[in-house]
Length: 268
Image 1 (spheres, rainbow, N blue to C red):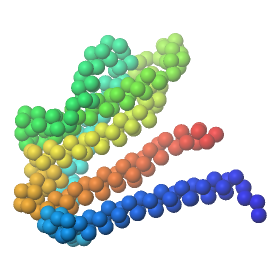
Image 2: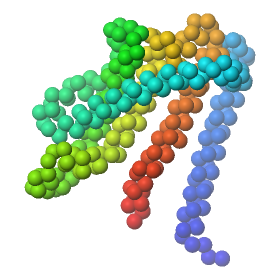
Image 3: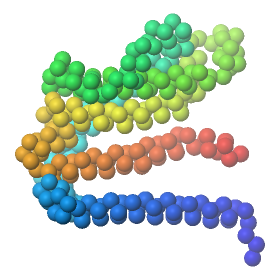
Image 4: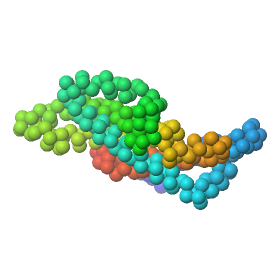
């Protein structure tokens, strides 16, 4: 029986997908199995609770309602902080079309890219204390430059002929940005948002450890003070699970939905 080229391609994709998932699952099995074995053998169970105990602790925290309240507080801070950082970064990136603005903001963007998030966390903690806008300021200062750089890179790839044609037909700056620049920058904006969220998530938890009275970081701090190592590891594990879920499921679904046309063009 003759096998078509399309069937060969589908078989290769299935094989690649199978290998990918099997290797990923084996990785989890090895890590979790080693962790469970080391608990109580390499280190005392109170110092290194195993995955079984961590899962039990997660169920207890869920029944007490702590997980939902902590994630609600943390996610609220992340959404507000990343939204402000995204708007500021995108606006600055679009302004870099102008050489004067590009030079004016160049050093500020460089500082934002090179400064560790911990510096901004400490500064905002000293300045704002435990006020609600402290974590937001830390997120914005840490992540806006990532969006700006991605947008500026997209600006550099703008088709000059299209811009010149728009200017020749006397299309205003606002309409030009709305109908030409921003649609062209969509992939760069999405990449900037993805980076800013991944960094903002870490900065938020870090600020909660230092100053907040609610959220995942706050719960981790209290558990550490009370030497409840199982709770500390539980919050860390929940942190990893949510980050993976948001990155691999939510953001990937959004990217596939809004940039499906790029794959269709590439396949033609």
